[in-house]
Length: 433
Image (cartoon, rainbow, N blue to C red; front, side, top):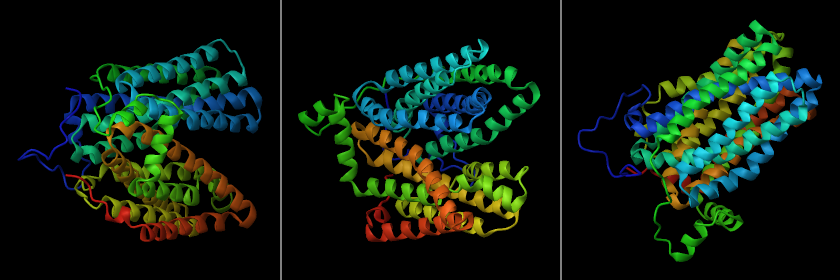
């Protein structure tokens, strides 16, 4: 049996705690192993995420080369995210996830080898980052498309909450731990340690994928022509996925609201200037960068209510509006502690919106389209914050950092409401039980 029955919950099945994070998906062994492997490997990846820019700057003494790492990671994500999603709809998802994971693991070992051998090539670093990004672009939509095949439909929000919470926790703990290693040993010794930790912990993820059941494409009643197109992971298959998204208002609106939230209200590009001008630098920059993730973790740990929400479309809109307003008010605050608290509240809203957006996509989309739509989702989620950085930096240069911060948050909240009211399909969406 390759999937869990998605019918109504069995009589007597407990609803879980009212506030504490819902851990019932962990009772499904396959999902539990996948969650554990992903959590451990994501923590390990944060070591590489710190080590690569440190090594690049040590080699070049030039922030331009460090910035090029973002380009090297983003371009493959755009290309392979869409193609990887098409592949996930055409072949066994377990096999695809295993292949892309092995590719990512090989790139990590290559980073470790070049650090041990002191190769010292900035171009090689860019190439290896691009390979890692391409592997992630294939594995991420595949991994997300698998979840509704592993847990019952009413536990999909809880499963996504577990995933997002542990991801945000790794975003806090991973860089802090990596920073301690670099402070204790210096770059020459810390670089191979960081890459080695990543490679070692990634083995847990590979073990989890190996233990998954076979997950071939499910039979479809859409007709022979649609089945043939789905079986061919080429441009036509990608276009079919985008066309399906464009003609499905609920999903299209959920994507559009996320783009609005990230492009208009993401404030992280403004953190260095705000930390320096308002709070005198020092530890302020670290607090600002970690505040949103800390809030997301706290929101996840108190998320027992999420799985009981049926009006998920309304909840998604409310969360995006809350994100924008919290960011805007944080931009007005002059006390560091208040800014951190408000950004943490924004992080709670971000977790809630991410869980509902992902759950709506996984449940609403048919399995034959799920991989392609997850590929688009991966591209949007990765691209939105980067475009948000560009928007924030450009506005700050033209109008000042305070205006860029506050106006972006307010515009995000207002546009989310306008879009939801003008196209009410998302507001009418109810979760399947």
